[in-house]
Image (cartoon, rainbow, N blue to C red; front, side, top):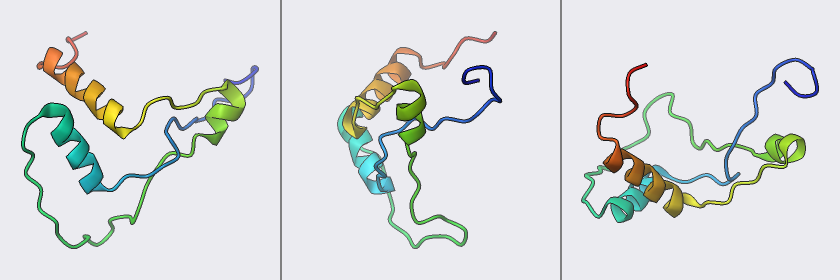
Length: 90
């Protein structure tokens, strides 16, 4: 809630979209492992692009993304490597 108002959603992101292939390549570099990928035609219903607009987060919260795709993939890979079973059960 912002200042006692109704709950609202705030997108966190860089405001820049990445292709699936860019993400696969970034994870290949982060993990140092091969990742099989096959380029095929878009399926019915697949969207052309999707990314988070961080403007509301910046305006309301003063939040701005500090990491790019490479660093996000490195951090995600490090966490997965250090936590192969995921989060502990509650």
